Image (tube, rainbow, N blue to C red; front, side, top):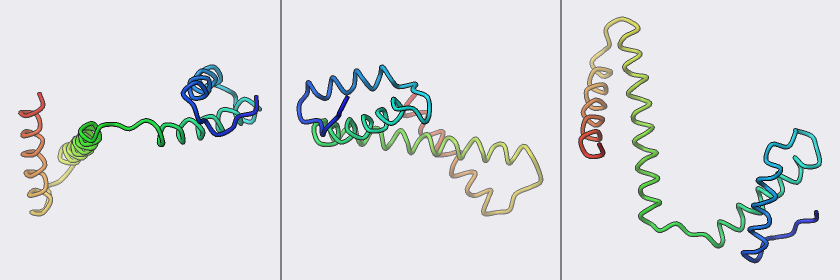
Length: 109
């Protein structure tokens, strides 16, 4: 099928349906090329017509930040368990990270 810029909700829904139908297309196939094009068209339509409320954007950003901090904390714990004593700066960073994680746990759990 020949795809053009999606301008209506109906075109968007049709593109979504087709995207889902060919989502697992094999690399190098005509369907894979069609899928790549559809993903661009769908993203373009969504960027222009679907707007998340500002509060949702903030929540998503906060969640991402929390997850990043959690990952750093886990890495830091692994570092602590794996080897020798840390220097003063590392210890200070560790204490701050642990305090922030505990604050996060208390406010979100």
